[in-house]
View 1 (cartoon, rainbow, N blue to C red):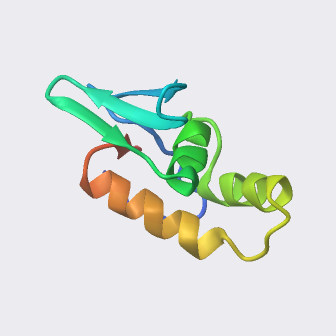
View 2: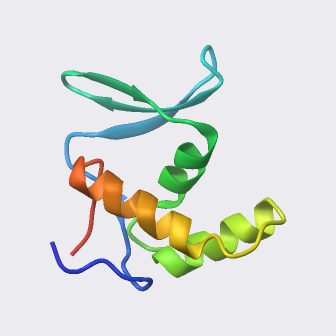
Amino acid sequence: MTALNASTQPRVGNGFRLQWEPVQNCHVLLYPEGMVKLNQSGGEIMARCDGQRDVAGIAAELEQAFAAKDLGPDVLAFVEMAGKQRWLAWD
């Protein structure tokens, strides 16, 4: 993986599938060995990681959607953590 920065375009990693789980009222990340239940913030970030949007764009969308400011560092930190878990990948 290349270095992570604001122009990185993360996507859901191979072998994982993100979906909304109505029974649990949250996004979950499914993989062959199990499931990860995401909190609201994680689910909102992961739902935007489509390989087209960059980290800066994801942060801007979330700031607008939730009337928040300065989410860039938090989004970058989540994407970094998710990359280490292989939930997210990028080129």
